Image (cartoon, rainbow, N blue to C red; front, side, top):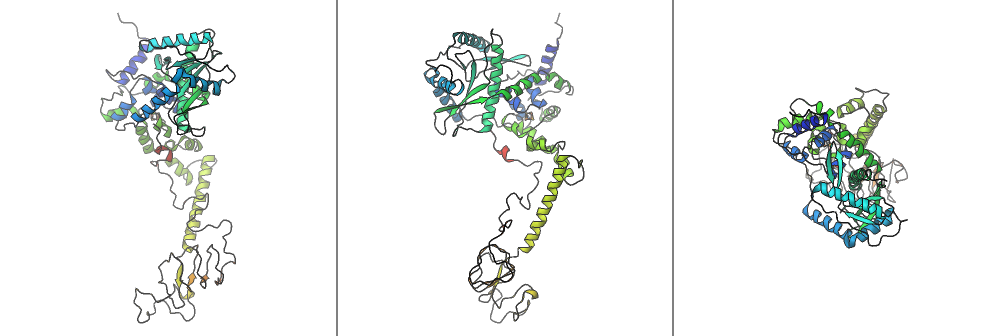
Length: 511
Ligand code: SF4
C-alpha cells in the first residue's frame, strides 16, 4: 500500500514535474546560492533553482544562451595561484590570516593540515565536521584544504566546497576565499569582491550549521579572508571582508526558497521547464513566473539575456538599474516616466513626478538657448573691402550690392584677390586685412583685421580695430567656447535612453 503523500513529498513531486520527465535535478553550488542574494526579489530564479532546473540549458532552449564560463587559461592560472598560496602546509595562508584577522593570537608556526579525503560528498562532509571538531578542541592553527560542507536548501542538502577554512587557536573558524583577480594598491574590482563576499557568506552559513551541532558551538567569524594576486605579480595579498550583510540576505533568500510551493501553485496547470520542449511552450512557462530583471543579473544568472530582452520590451525602468528604479518611485515603465515628465499623467505632489517635470523644463530651456546660440553662430566670413556681403545692412559705402555683376575677368569660381566667397564658412584664420563679420568663433584675427559684431572669446590682437565688442577678449564666467560643453550641461540632442538602450555597466559582463 503506498505511503500517504506528505506536504514535502507533494512539493518534491511538483518540482520534479516542473523539471520535466527524466530530467535530473541540478545540484546547487555556492555560486548559484550566492547569486540568489544578487537578486533577492526574483520569483523566477527562486522557483527554477528550487526545482533544480538547469538554467543554462533552459536559456539555450529559449534561444538566449548564457555567456557564462571561464577560459582554460584563467582556470589554470587560478589553480596555480591557489597552489602557491597553500604551499608549505599553508604557511603563507596562515600568516595572512594571523596578520589580517587575528593579530593578537600567537603567530602560526607549522599549522596542522588534516586529511579530509573520504568517499562521496556525504563522507567528505562528515570527515570535515570531525576535523573541525578535533581542531577546535586542540586549539592550534589548523588549515582545512577544500573541506566539504552541507547546507540544507529547500529540504535537500547542497554540498559546498570552500577554498579553505582556518581554525584559530581560540577555536574560531574563518572562511578563506582565493581568487585570481588582482588586488591593485590594496583594492580590487568591487563587483568581483561583491560576488566573492556573497559566495563566502554561503560558506559561513554552511559552517554555522556544522558549528550548531557542537557543544559549545564555536564562533564562525563573519569577516572572511579574500586572497588575491598582489598588483600584477603572482604573490598573494589579502584583505578582510565583512560578509554580515551578504549572510543575512542569503539566509533570507534560502528561507524564501522553502516557499517555492507558493510560487509553483500560481503556475498554470501543466507548466514544465524541460529543455526538450519547443521554445514557444518554454517561453510561455517561463513568462508565467514573475521576474525582476536588473543589470546585476548579467553576472549572476544564466537567464539574463532572455529576461533582459523581455524587460526591455515591456519598457521596465529596472532594466536600466535598480538605483534609477528606486528614484522613480511608482513609475515603473518608460511610458509612465515620459507621461509624468510631460504633464500627461502622475501626481504633481509626487517628488519623482515634480523632479521629472522640472528636468523637462530645464532641458527645454537648454535646448532653446542652444538653438538661439546656434542662430547667432554664423560662420566667420572674412571679406576684403570689395567683397560682397550678405545684406544691405552689412554693406560699407561703396561696396557692390548683392547680385551685382561680378567684375570682368573674374571667373565665378575664382574670387577676387583678398575676397572671400559669401556663404562659405572659413574655418581658418581670415586673410590679412580682411574684416570678420558676426564672428563668434574663437580665434585670433590677424594684425590689421577688423572684427565686427563679435562676441568671440579670444584675446584681441594689438592693433586690430574691434568696433562693437567689449574691451576684454577674455571670456567671462559662464561663457564657453563654441563646441565646448558647459560643465554639467547635457548635449543639445542628448536623447532620453530608449527602453532598449544599453547602459555602460551592461557592457562589462563579469564572468
Ligand atoms: S536573469 Fe531573470 S531569472 Fe535570473 S535573476 Fe534575473 S530576472 Fe531572475
